[in-house]
Image (cartoon, rainbow, N blue to C red):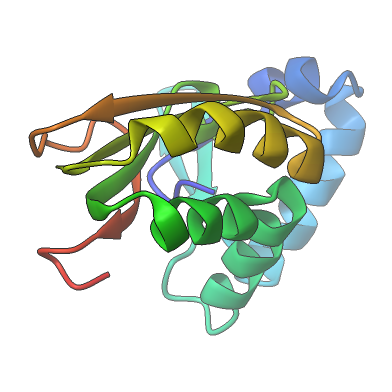
Length: 153
């Protein structure tokens, strides 16, 4: 999800509950395909998504759809009022699918009544816990920006 996230072999093995050999094999395959880049820092190899890969945006979109983020964003922008930003924070912004998605929505005159029913609806749709925080002022992105009205994205 977040192209700035870096991981190493042991961390990924722990996260996925797989052997380091199985993870190493897949990391080598993804690196050879150009989907991941790797850099060595002392005795540790860090892996990161290759944003220059021609299929990076396609892969990222598939992951967003798998996590349900496309539907989440669609629902927020549809009826929330004057949305300025939608920012993912917490585990999901770090690339960890813990089953909980934390989102900060900023904007003027956000429809707070709508948000009460929206959370439960989105949780059913994407089968994950959703925590929405509403703010009336813009903020620097502490996570992964899904939408920014001022940036045009």
